[in-house]
Amino acid sequence: MKRLFKRIKKLFTDRRAWVRLILVASIAASVAWQIGDLAIKNGGVVAAIICSLSIRVSLYKSVREGFGQIVGTAIGAGVALLTVWLFNFGIIAVGITVLLCSVVARGLHLGEVASVNVPVTALIVIGPGLSESTAFSRLMSTLIGAGVAIVFSYFSHRKTPAGRTVDKISSLASRSADLLGKMAEGVAAGYEQDQAGEWLAKARLLADEIPSLRTQALEALGYAKWFPTAQKVEAENLYTQGIAIEHTVVQVRTIARTLFEAAVEDGIPISTQRQIAHALSSASYAITTKADQIRNLASLASTESATSDIRLAGAALADSLIDNSTQIGQEHLVRGIALVSNIERIADSLDESSPALHEVLTPGEPASNKILKVSTIDQTTKLSKRLLKPFKRLFRK
Image (cartoon, rainbow, N blue to C red):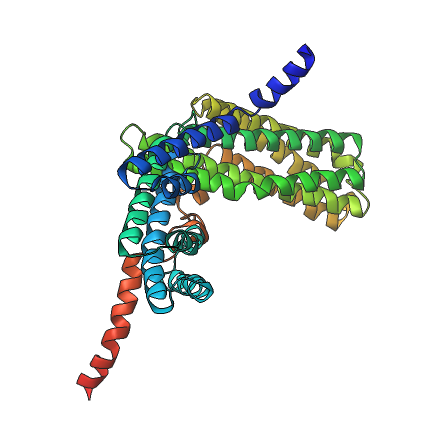
């Protein structure tokens, strides 16, 4: 019995963040229901539904989600009132409401989240007994639910967006370092194609996490802009470090593919195995040092020392390749030089000396994740140009 209790307890203790989120969401929905029912007659259900849909793991995301719910409800209420006034409540009104809401959401270039919210909230508003007063009360209930979700989302996670960004960066860096360490051991021992395939598969999985890392870093930046207790400089540094780890992960994946392609043919020449393994091991140690530096908010001094070792190992590998160029063949020489280039880029990324980190604008989050894919300024500018175009032609004539 005691063992069973420990196992059940471990299921929850290992998932503390998830447990915290669902507990906060449950309490928030209950509070939204109570406030909605007290403020508006029968408004608790709608408020609880909207609160449950809006609450997210962070205050920043919940504000965006709540705004999407409000936009969706405003559009949905208007469309629902129009269709019910024309067709009364029934199958035709429901179908036309969803159709018109989807068209309006597309026309306004709403993001993926808000586009879903429009028909969902319209169906909530279009319930039986719809009138101007009930539509208004459901709109107010939506505002209450979104507001409660925004307030409670502050407690959904014990860490700030900056803290979550640190965890994301250091975790991705640590796993990249572990993978490079395994590659170094495999090359030194003489690896096979199956082993190289496993490295490449793991490297691809690491690269798949780059979009979520970028989104988290952007959230920390956005949070720091409008929340008074956040430190903007810290968020900007984390954003740069996130890009550095992103570039590092891409190079790790490229190294894994190079080693796999070499294994497909006749493997790494014995004369260069030692130098390649040493270079990969140095890169692994430098990435681990970078992860520790980010996790402990330390200076770049330790990382710069580790990256110096990478560059020395890369230079030794390049010298070895040139010395043995007549023996290893052109294809192996090209692959070896490519590995040297990958390792050099890892060093430039880790010590943040590469111009690619500072002088190139990194794209923001995907438009599908935004409430509005196209800003209202751009939309109104394009619309005004279209409306004024016939008049300009007329005056020209």
